[in-house]
Length: 295
Image (cartoon, rainbow, N blue to C red):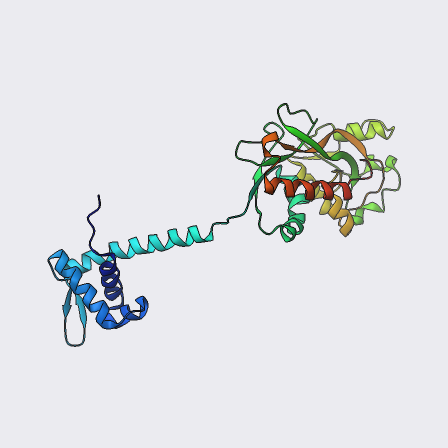
């Protein structure tokens, strides 16, 4: 059991010591100067020693008062931070979405403003997800690229994944037909090492030449294409915004399916969560509206 002096007295002393006067403390605490003086005096009686030397034109803490004030200031600051944090807590539903970083940056995040405008009461948290771990226990749902087989989960298709060549507009003039690609710089990434081989075979062309630039991630290869370094295979729907804005162009319309799709993955127990129900409806509607032509 804590044996604390009056908290009002401690507050009055701390404020007076910080301001250097009972008048300053009274203004902060919204009480009279006399009330502050009385609370400090009662605190001193309770402690059994003086906290201030009361001089004609000054209020000077005693050595014990100087030792007590820093700890009280830190404690009251901590209380204020705790109260502010609790006051700022949202009372509405919390939605945690696990999603791959590239899909989040290139498709989901640019559209989240629309969801927030429709459902400002839902707090959205974006977490990093992946095909090897489609959904963690603390996530509401996941958006995953895969074959749609995740036992024990509810799985709903969103987008098919198609690959088609994309490049900066400055390079498109030299690419009039697929046979022109071997003369271009082909950009590939280690995540899908056979993507160009697959596309060339679908186009009825021999295997691509060894003249390629390889990157450690799809995001880097796509950025290189945006910067005019060469031609990469764009993955739908990662590229829809760049195509619409004219940052990328598709010199040839052939889109080759990757054999995988994006799915909304959740646990059956989450189906009735208010945040998830609203997000699922919004996400499925957006996916249907923006489904690539190859879907």
